[in-house]
Image (cartoon, rainbow, N blue to C red):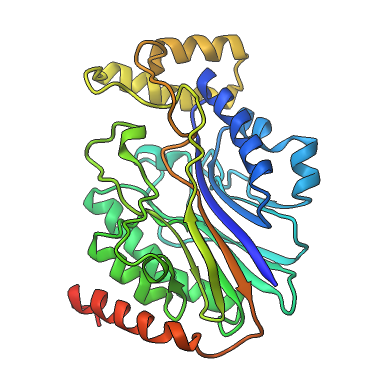
Length: 342
């Protein structure tokens, strides 16, 4: 049996007019994708979450759903993770990482980082699917916390699931594939395999597009990954470019924001708790988010691209497929030796 999985960072954060449009189009895209299992992250804002998920056709297409909507403690928002499945979910679990930035630091006042696990029924055997979103940012303290979360992943996965059985770990790891932290990630998750460089040698496979947000300090890179055990061979693995016409979260490069404007943008995150009327949200968007002329058109629906894999589910096997074993070994040895982590 094949299982069609997709991961997508949908960036539903701000309660703006443009984001209402994006949420509607994202929902249509998810339904039309017709995947078996979809993992989403950054499904934060309540109104946008309702637009995206509270839909009869989506519920009929994906009758099984996991999401964490509990703010939990001092943090006002949940982790933003959602798992949609056509296939029955036998069991599930949510685990919060021990490594978290203090609530007082930036956006971490509102969000937490955790991991969702689901045992999904397939034939001839069930599959353990993990969905996560690690700490974002390139500053030293953000990098350190992300390293600690990476070190936690393998322990959490092994506690919840036997990785000798079919296993998929997917999400936005916020790990740039050009960085030495990538070597740490693949070594911690091994024997689970990042199949992209195996299936597409030499292709960058960028899942994050800096042009969609004008974040010139962050390079185009792979931040989103689908890892799987070596008995789950991807028949296909591709980046999907929805390329829908939508006025998106793109600021023109010559339209810099003042400190006050940046503060007001962050203030709208707080205002979302009040679940303001749509007319007022539109006015906030126009004033503080830069609706026209700062927004451009004809960009994809998020600053990330969906990563999709058609994966063959086999009986549990302790070793990789023979044809791929050498490629996996050579690739991983090259990466680990390059960063001297082998």
